[in-house]
Length: 380
Image 1 (tube, rainbow, N blue to C red):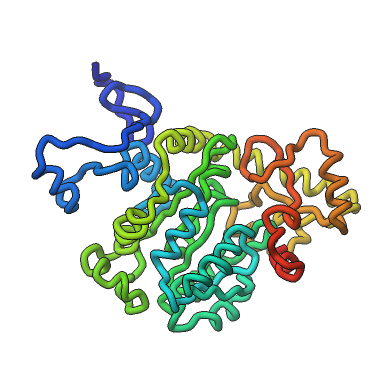
Image 2 (cartoon, one colour):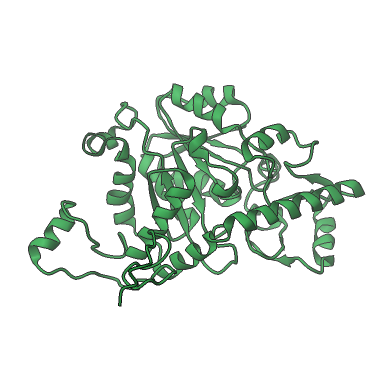
């Protein structure tokens, strides 16, 4: 029976029965009343769902909510954050093309770029994201994207997104920003001039370490027909500013299958309900801990909320006085770091961030272990 008084929006529940939570549609396929109707859906001439590898009602509601939170027009969900990054870059670049990337990105993204992408013939040039002149100098006619994180992990450097956006736009190159560490609760890269946002929803979006997922959000205001992206020319002709999202969904996403699942989308949507409150508490706890540890003087503390941090002013301006939930300690040696970690009584030793619990990890021996010492130092 329909509850006529309830008028839920797309993220508040099911208007057909008044339910207040997102329905989970665990359906692989979707039936149609006629072959003609199904044909129109496949052709894109009628709305509908074809197969959950491509789209699903639960996923679409989560995507609409993420697009709203990030201030974009279109969102697309993925099985993981790494799947989102891989798909975005494969939609932008081909063999012989180039990506200009921050040198201080997450270790998993770094190895994706220098190993798999190298084998595919996609060159990745690493630069200091704080040096806009270096970024500009690295861009060539082969460059298809500039990629940065809002806060490097674990370097905790904070690039000036507005400055990078200006540099990229002057050269007709898309700026892709990983917003995992800050989330839209602290910062909206699209509002600062980014063209595409990627995010690992497994982290703060979920908030409890119960599901994997990724998402991209497209601002849909980039000129994809500017000549730099010949493979998007037809899509630009048909879809205009939505050319990239259309190509990503209809080509890369459909054909490679990095699809999200409805149950995880439900868990992410539940996490979104408390994201702003959790991020506020995360940031407060991290700042308090950073100041206390810094005052002890026994370890070098890196946290953007400290006045001593090189990017403190950029972080203050971009993130509105909140500085994220990650801090790093430099304790002089692997053994010293291990002793510190093993002595902790409240923190859990876990390869993750964004959990409601306090987590600790030694990056050099875990997600950066495959890199040589020089690269590990360069990545913080």
